[in-house]
Length: 193
Ligand SMILES: N[C@@H](CCC(=O)N[C@@H](CS)C(=O)NCC(=O)O)C(=O)O
Image (cartoon, rainbow, N blue to C red; front, side, top):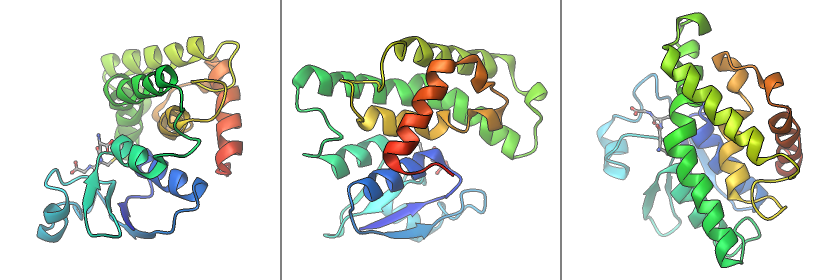
């Protein structure tokens, strides 16, 4: 498998972490978003959306969208609950991550990365990001992981941008359940650095 990814991107790193956790062999092809390496004709032939992560499976079929890739890689593994309800809860978190968390927490970080100071971020972005972190904190009260008391794709996906939310000006100390969960997920994935 080839993974086209930008190492600064949580969407890409979550795919790498899942592949590492599942001991799947892959070749990582660093693809710089800021240098528009996702907009070349060769890349657009793999993913017309022009986004990383994109993977090319061993049989040559491409696949995009980080959470879809996670599901493909983890099919039949212990990262996907066998129980029907828990599997659906995991998907609930994956859809929520893409619509209500990543667009605020990740985008704030990216804007700071591109040169804005956290004070210059659009207030709505910050409010929505804080609301997402608070929702996670509430959901994690008295729990070790998001679904079924064991690591699942919900944790892999959501930890990606949550663990670096501070780089976008969010104060992770305000979310103690989230902080403790980040430590658990990092340990489970062996990604603490
Ligand atoms: N929903 C997509 C989002 C992918 C995405 O936004 N990728 C960014 C990097 S994090 C990208 O490739 N941006 C380049 C572009 O849109 O031109 C996913 O989860 O994979």
